[in-house]
Structure formats: C-alpha cells, structure tokens
Length: 502
Image (cartoon, rainbow, N blue to C red; front, side, top):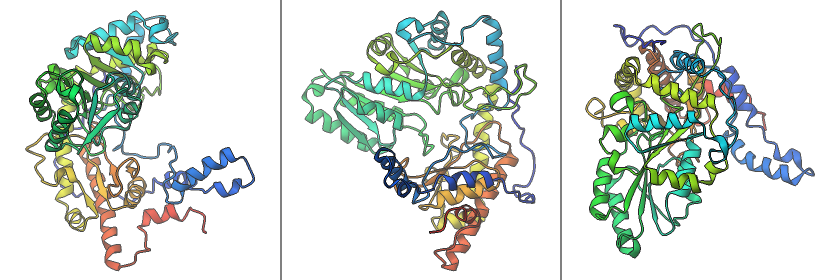
C-alpha cells in the first residue's frame, strides 16, 4: 500500500528567507471578476423569466459576492477536505484499484433505487462491515452528506416531536428540518449548554405530550463544526437532556462529517465512539468524502495514470428501527438511484486505508502540525498587532490553551467585513487556496477565510501560509494607519481593477 508520506518535521527557524514572489492568482482573479458582471439591465425587453433570475444574481454581484467555479491554480493546499492525505498520496487510489481487481466484471451503474433492484450483495456486505467496525446495528450507505441529512431530518422526527438544534448546524441538516413532520423547532446558542438547558426546560413546561413521555425531543449537533472548527460539548448536553427527560424521550442525532476518520479509537472511528457515547446517540451521520479522501492527488505510477478519485458517499449509523424507517419513508433515498459500485468500492477502500498504521500516524501528525501552526501564527509580532486591532482573529483559540484542550484541523481566520475577500486574493496570489466565507453562509460580521490543515502539509508550507497571512496583515495595518479608506491592499486591487468602471 502506498504510504501517506507524512513529512517529518525539520529543525529550522520559523522565519526563513522568503522566496521571490510569484503571482499564482491571475486566473482566480479573472474568474472572480467575470462572476461580478451585472447582467440584469441588459435583458430589458427580454424574457422576464431570465431577467428576474439575473437581477437576483446581480444583488450579490454588486458587492463582489458573485460565486464562480474556480479552476485549480494553487500550489499549496489549505482548503480541501483531504485532511489525512489519502487522496493526495495515492494511498486510496491504490487500495481502490485492488478492490476493482478483486471484483472482476463489476457493474458501472446501480440499476435502480435501493428499493428497486439497486441494492447489491456488495452494498449489503459493505454496510455490515461498517456497522461491525463502528459497533452499531446498522449502517446505511447513501450518495452524499446532503442526502443523508435530508433523509434523517425529514423522516426521523415524528409529528408532535420537537426539534432542538445547535444554531450552527449545517445547512443540509436545516434543509431537512424544513420538511420535517416535527413543526416545533428551536435552536440553542452555539455550544451553549446553559441555553440548551433553558430550551429543554421550556419545552418540558409547554409541551404536555413531551413532558408525559409520549413525544420526543430530537436534538441535532455536529461533532466538529465546519465553519468555526470547534468541538461539541456532547457529553454535557446528553447529561443535561437525560436529567430533564429521564424517560429517554430526548434523543441525539450527531453529524460527524468532519470528525470521522480524524479522531477516535481503532482507526479514527469518530467522535461519538471516542467519547464512549454510542449507546447515548440515536443516529450518527458520517461522510466518506472528508478524511476518507475528498480530493484527488498525484498519479504515483498508478496503472490508471492520472486518475483522480473522489469518495462521494455518506453513511447513516443507527439501530435497525431507524434503518427500517429510512428505507420505508425517506423520499430522498427512495427516489434516488443507489450508489454505484465504483463509488461504494471507493468508500470500502477508504475504510481499509483508515485502519492502517500510516493513517494513525497521519492523525497524530495532523494534531502536531495544527499545534505548530497555532504557535507559529500567534507568536508572530504582526499577527499580534493585527489581532489587537481586530483585523485578524481566531475566536476558538483566543484563550491560547490549544496545548491543553482538544482541537481540530479547521482553523479559520476571521476578518473585518469584506476583508475575507482581500485576504483570499492575497493568499491565492501566493499559491494558497484560501476560501472566503461570508454572509449568508455565516452571520453578518463573521466573515472569515476557512483554512484546513492536512497530514500532507509540511511545516515549510505552514510557514509559507503564516508569512502570507502576516504580510497581508502588515499591509492592512499600513492602510489603516494612513487613514485612506479608499485604498485597497495590493492583491485585492489587482482583482478590482478587472471590474468594469462605472
């Protein structure tokens, strides 16, 4: 099996001589600028159908918020979800090809939905393997995290139940809740156990059927929150729910999209298992396209030269009662063609790689690299100045206690409004794929650049990232000191110069 080729840390000063700058961001800027073209006025007198759509899109374009599909232009990856490097190193590809070889004559298509001849013996075998490995009754493989969350939240809560969920739950879960039979839905402040208790106490007093134990409170949380990078206080939430509803009618659904594979015993089997809470959680959603390799990689002499392999499936872990409900009533699953053999085989290959010693080393290295990044960035004098001025911040890590508490590989840099784009332009110019995240994906005033660290990143690459962030911060400090509110940082100016002049 191809090793994950985790870079060994090198002894060196954190502030090396910066290499000569090369502009890697020209294509990215062109794509962004093209996506800001205002088109509604040009359709006056044309089809009202298309004009209305373009005018809706123009609302975002006017503020630079038009979203293009960027072609890859980076040289260093700090954005993809391939956190263990299974795709980058070719380890998943190699195991996938072995799986194909072991199943000669495999079908390309599924042939139908899971209920209409789409379920194969291969599906059944893979699901049984997952269930046994994790320690649950049932594993149900579906196409994607969106499909899984839509199936769970539209189907599992019953009429008369009450939904309670963390305010930062993923949009795919919220989409499922919109069509849920449970009409009473209450968010609680993110990771706020006290507010969670207040919500449950309120439900107990205002919902007689729930108080009597005849209806349920269905609680939704994520293990690792994908936009903030913090961790759910799951044990405290479960203990509070059991105290308020001792009849067992408060049940948890946990989205483990970003933690499964990255943590947990015996092969990174996730947050809930690592916490010893499998018996306390009704449903767990895992994706096979994050730690199990969401991105492609290099060919490494593969017989299928240059293939890029992406695992796009997800899996719902539960008992057999929930499994039966989903099979019978989850429309998004009933009406979808089953995952094809190649997709399912890629997921199975990913699980096998996940159990290897090299994958465990990758998990350990990733934590060490994250500590190194946080230490290196926050010790930089420019970062300290910019943080004090409110130009850059990391709310999850404001206490500076990352060596003493659990942390994740998700380390977003929060900025002032509009500055997330400015920082992204700067990072992309330096060959780093920093992704700006702004409203409505996050709340107003919480703009950020989302950064994912990976086991295939080296310390040298992390230092390149830190230098790029801090050089941008230095430029922003100079602009603020000048008092010139119309002045743009250099990389952003290159982008905005491509826009049509009014």
